[in-house]
Amino acid sequence: MKTLLTLAASLSIVVSGSAMANSDLAKSKNCMACHSVDAKLVGPAFRDVAKKYAGDKKAEAILVTKVLKGGSGVWGAIPMPANAQVSEADAKTLVKWILSVK
Image (tube, rainbow, N blue to C red; front, side, top):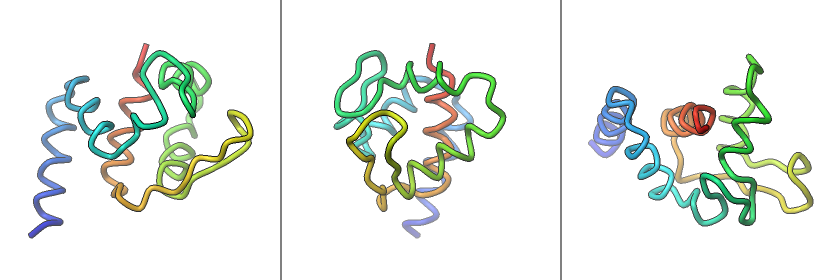
C-alpha cells in the first residue's frame, strides 16, 4: 500500500508539472539540506547543475544514479551520499525538475 501511495504521489507530481510540487519533493527528500535552487550550499545550486548538463543526452541517467547511489569529485571534495529514502521514480522526477531549473 505504501508503495502504491508513493507511486500515486510521484505520478501526480509528474502530471502536474508544477515547479512548486517538485520543490516540495526535493524538500521532503532532504535535498534542500545540501542544495538550493540558486546558491551553492554544501553541494551545487540546482541552477548550476542544470547549466552544467544542458544539452547532455546522458544527463538524466547520470544524475538519477548520483541521486540514488551518491557521487564525488564533480563539484569538489565533499561527496554526495547515497539517498536510500529516494525511490527511482522520485529520483527521475527530481532530476527532470533540476535539469529544467533556469
